[in-house]
Amino acid sequence: MPNNRRRSKLIAARYAVNKASIRRMPPTACLGAVRLNLFSNVRINDIGVLAQREILSARLFEPPRVYAEFVRDTTDRLAADPTPEMAARLRAGLNLAGYQLQGIADAVSGFVEVPDDDEQPDAARVLDAPSLQRGELLTSGLIENEVDEEALTNASPTARTVRKARQVLELVTQCNEAGKTSSIGVEIFKPTTRLMTVFSELPWLCPPSNPAPQVSRG
Image 1 (spheres, helix red, strand yellow):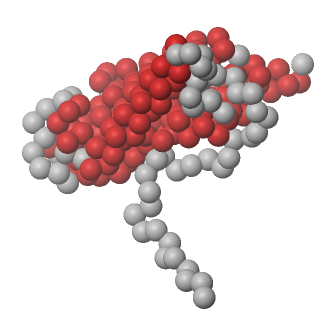
Image 2 (cartoon, one colour):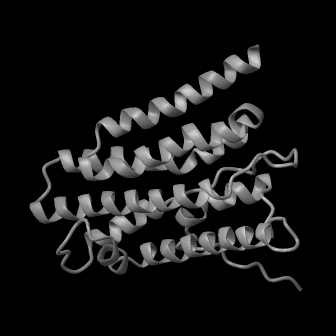
Protein backbone atom coordinates (compact mmCIF):
# COMPACT_ATOMS: atom_id res chain seq x y z
CA MET A 1 0.00 0.00 0.00
CA PRO A 2 2.74 2.59 0.79
CA ASN A 3 4.29 1.93 -2.62
CA ASN A 4 0.93 2.50 -4.31
CA ARG A 5 0.45 5.80 -2.48
CA ARG A 6 3.96 6.93 -3.41
CA ARG A 7 3.36 5.98 -7.04
CA SER A 8 0.06 7.90 -7.09
CA LYS A 9 1.72 11.01 -5.69
CA LEU A 10 4.49 10.80 -8.31
CA ILE A 11 2.02 10.50 -11.17
CA ALA A 12 -0.19 13.28 -9.79
CA ALA A 13 2.81 15.61 -9.50
CA ARG A 14 3.86 14.94 -13.09
CA TYR A 15 0.36 15.57 -14.42
CA ALA A 16 -0.03 18.72 -12.30
CA VAL A 17 3.09 20.27 -13.83
CA ASN A 18 1.94 19.48 -17.34
CA LYS A 19 -1.67 20.64 -16.87
CA ALA A 20 -0.66 23.89 -15.20
CA SER A 21 1.68 24.68 -18.07
CA ILE A 22 -0.88 23.77 -20.72
CA ARG A 23 -3.33 26.29 -19.28
CA ARG A 24 -0.77 29.07 -19.88
CA MET A 25 0.11 28.04 -23.44
CA PRO A 26 -0.90 29.90 -26.58
CA PRO A 27 -3.43 27.75 -28.51
CA THR A 28 -0.88 26.71 -31.13
CA ALA A 29 1.45 25.34 -28.44
CA CYS A 30 -1.11 23.15 -26.70
CA LEU A 31 -1.47 20.25 -29.11
CA GLY A 32 1.92 18.66 -28.54
CA ALA A 33 1.56 18.60 -24.75
CA VAL A 34 -2.00 17.29 -24.92
CA ARG A 35 -0.90 14.59 -27.35
CA LEU A 36 1.93 13.35 -25.16
CA ASN A 37 -0.19 13.55 -22.01
CA LEU A 38 -2.73 11.33 -23.76
CA PHE A 39 0.02 8.86 -24.65
CA SER A 40 1.34 8.94 -21.08
CA ASN A 41 -2.09 8.33 -19.59
CA VAL A 42 -3.18 5.58 -21.97
CA ARG A 43 -0.24 3.79 -23.58
CA ILE A 44 2.14 3.64 -20.60
CA ASN A 45 -0.69 2.74 -18.23
CA ASP A 46 -2.14 0.09 -20.56
CA ILE A 47 1.10 -1.87 -20.84
CA GLY A 48 1.78 -1.69 -17.10
CA VAL A 49 4.91 0.46 -16.98
CA LEU A 50 3.36 2.84 -14.42
CA ALA A 51 2.38 -0.03 -12.15
CA GLN A 52 5.57 -2.08 -12.47
CA ARG A 53 8.40 0.39 -13.14
CA GLU A 54 7.66 3.75 -11.55
CA ILE A 55 11.18 5.20 -11.86
CA LEU A 56 11.30 4.30 -15.53
CA SER A 57 7.83 5.82 -15.94
CA ALA A 58 9.08 9.07 -14.46
CA ARG A 59 11.97 9.14 -16.94
CA LEU A 60 9.59 8.59 -19.86
CA PHE A 61 7.86 11.79 -18.71
CA GLU A 62 11.09 13.78 -19.18
CA PRO A 63 10.26 15.24 -22.64
CA PRO A 64 6.87 16.67 -21.53
CA ARG A 65 8.48 17.98 -18.33
CA VAL A 66 11.15 19.77 -20.38
CA TYR A 67 8.45 21.06 -22.73
CA ALA A 68 6.41 22.38 -19.81
CA GLU A 69 9.40 24.35 -18.53
CA PHE A 70 10.17 25.61 -22.03
CA VAL A 71 6.58 26.81 -22.49
CA ARG A 72 6.64 28.57 -19.14
CA ASP A 73 9.89 30.37 -19.97
CA THR A 74 8.73 31.34 -23.47
CA THR A 75 5.33 32.61 -22.33
CA ASP A 76 7.10 34.71 -19.69
CA ARG A 77 9.15 36.27 -22.50
CA LEU A 78 6.01 36.88 -24.54
CA ALA A 79 4.42 38.57 -21.52
CA ALA A 80 7.37 41.00 -21.36
CA ASP A 81 6.00 42.86 -24.42
CA PRO A 82 8.66 42.06 -27.06
CA THR A 83 8.55 43.63 -30.50
CA PRO A 84 6.06 42.04 -32.93
CA GLU A 85 8.93 40.43 -34.82
CA MET A 86 10.45 38.95 -31.67
CA ALA A 87 7.02 37.76 -30.49
CA ALA A 88 6.51 35.95 -33.80
CA ARG A 89 9.88 34.25 -33.44
CA LEU A 90 9.11 33.20 -29.85
CA ARG A 91 5.77 31.74 -30.95
CA ALA A 92 7.57 29.98 -33.80
CA GLY A 93 9.88 28.34 -31.25
CA LEU A 94 6.86 27.17 -29.26
CA ASN A 95 5.19 25.76 -32.33
CA LEU A 96 8.32 23.96 -33.47
CA ALA A 97 8.86 22.33 -30.07
CA GLY A 98 5.19 21.29 -30.02
CA TYR A 99 5.49 19.62 -33.42
CA GLN A 100 8.60 17.79 -32.24
CA LEU A 101 6.85 16.64 -29.08
CA GLN A 102 4.16 15.03 -31.21
CA GLY A 103 6.87 13.17 -33.12
CA ILE A 104 8.41 11.95 -29.87
CA ALA A 105 4.99 10.72 -28.73
CA ASP A 106 4.45 8.84 -31.97
CA ALA A 107 7.87 7.20 -31.81
CA VAL A 108 7.75 6.24 -28.14
CA SER A 109 4.20 4.88 -28.31
CA GLY A 110 5.34 2.35 -30.90
CA PHE A 111 8.35 1.21 -28.90
CA VAL A 112 7.77 1.31 -25.15
CA GLU A 113 7.15 -1.97 -23.31
CA VAL A 114 7.69 -3.31 -19.81
CA PRO A 115 11.38 -4.31 -19.97
CA ASP A 116 12.58 -7.73 -18.86
CA ASP A 117 15.65 -6.33 -17.10
CA ASP A 118 15.75 -4.94 -13.57
CA GLU A 119 18.08 -2.01 -14.31
CA GLN A 120 17.36 1.45 -12.99
CA PRO A 121 17.44 4.35 -15.47
CA ASP A 122 20.77 6.13 -15.69
CA ALA A 123 21.30 9.76 -14.72
CA ALA A 124 18.96 12.32 -16.26
CA ARG A 125 20.19 13.97 -19.43
CA VAL A 126 19.99 17.65 -20.38
CA LEU A 127 17.37 18.05 -23.13
CA ASP A 128 18.12 21.54 -24.40
CA ALA A 129 17.12 21.33 -28.07
CA PRO A 130 13.96 23.47 -27.62
CA SER A 131 15.95 26.32 -26.05
CA LEU A 132 18.80 26.07 -28.54
CA GLN A 133 16.55 26.15 -31.58
CA ARG A 134 14.54 29.04 -30.10
CA GLY A 135 17.78 31.01 -29.89
CA GLU A 136 18.56 30.15 -33.50
CA LEU A 137 15.11 31.29 -34.63
CA LEU A 138 15.51 34.57 -32.75
CA THR A 139 18.63 35.38 -34.79
CA SER A 140 17.74 33.75 -38.12
CA GLY A 141 16.56 35.43 -41.29
CA LEU A 142 12.99 36.40 -42.07
CA ILE A 143 10.33 34.04 -40.68
CA GLU A 144 7.30 34.35 -42.91
CA ASN A 145 5.10 31.74 -41.26
CA GLU A 146 5.43 30.92 -37.57
CA VAL A 147 3.45 27.66 -37.93
CA ASP A 148 5.30 26.24 -40.96
CA GLU A 149 7.14 23.26 -39.47
CA GLU A 150 9.27 22.60 -42.55
CA ALA A 151 10.42 26.23 -42.88
CA LEU A 152 11.13 26.56 -39.16
CA THR A 153 13.13 23.33 -39.17
CA ASN A 154 15.20 24.48 -42.12
CA ALA A 155 15.91 27.78 -40.33
CA SER A 156 17.42 26.04 -37.29
CA PRO A 157 20.49 23.76 -37.37
CA THR A 158 19.39 22.23 -34.06
CA ALA A 159 15.92 21.50 -35.43
CA ARG A 160 17.45 19.76 -38.43
CA THR A 161 19.42 17.54 -36.05
CA VAL A 162 16.21 16.80 -34.13
CA ARG A 163 14.57 15.75 -37.39
CA LYS A 164 17.42 13.34 -38.15
CA ALA A 165 17.16 11.84 -34.66
CA ARG A 166 13.42 11.29 -35.13
CA GLN A 167 14.14 9.53 -38.42
CA VAL A 168 16.48 7.19 -36.54
CA LEU A 169 13.70 6.39 -34.06
CA GLU A 170 11.27 5.74 -36.88
CA LEU A 171 13.78 3.39 -38.49
CA VAL A 172 14.20 1.48 -35.22
CA THR A 173 10.43 1.08 -34.92
CA GLN A 174 10.15 -0.09 -38.52
CA CYS A 175 12.95 -2.63 -37.98
CA ASN A 176 11.15 -3.99 -34.92
CA GLU A 177 7.88 -4.29 -36.80
CA ALA A 178 9.67 -6.10 -39.63
CA GLY A 179 11.35 -8.42 -37.13
CA LYS A 180 8.07 -9.34 -35.46
CA THR A 181 6.41 -10.16 -38.78
CA SER A 182 9.41 -12.06 -40.16
CA SER A 183 10.42 -15.67 -39.59
CA ILE A 184 12.34 -14.75 -36.43
CA GLY A 185 9.18 -13.29 -34.89
CA VAL A 186 10.86 -10.94 -32.38
CA GLU A 187 12.02 -7.34 -32.20
CA ILE A 188 15.49 -6.58 -33.54
CA PHE A 189 16.01 -3.80 -30.95
CA LYS A 190 14.78 -5.14 -27.62
CA PRO A 191 13.13 -2.45 -25.43
CA THR A 192 15.46 -2.49 -22.43
CA THR A 193 15.34 0.11 -19.68
CA ARG A 194 18.40 1.93 -21.03
CA LEU A 195 17.24 1.83 -24.63
CA MET A 196 13.76 3.15 -23.78
CA THR A 197 15.11 6.17 -21.91
CA VAL A 198 17.52 6.93 -24.75
CA PHE A 199 14.72 6.41 -27.26
CA SER A 200 12.42 8.95 -25.61
CA GLU A 201 15.14 11.57 -25.06
CA LEU A 202 17.34 11.26 -28.16
CA PRO A 203 15.58 13.88 -30.36
CA TRP A 204 16.13 16.67 -27.82
CA LEU A 205 19.56 15.56 -26.67
CA CYS A 206 22.25 17.90 -28.02
CA PRO A 207 26.03 17.64 -27.69
CA PRO A 208 27.70 20.35 -25.57
CA SER A 209 28.80 23.38 -27.54
CA ASN A 210 32.19 23.35 -25.78
CA PRO A 211 33.17 19.71 -25.19
CA ALA A 212 35.80 18.98 -22.60
CA PRO A 213 39.33 18.76 -24.02
CA GLN A 214 40.75 15.28 -24.48
CA VAL A 215 43.46 14.34 -22.02
CA SER A 216 46.45 12.77 -23.74
CA ARG A 217 47.95 9.65 -22.29
CA GLY A 218 51.52 8.68 -22.69
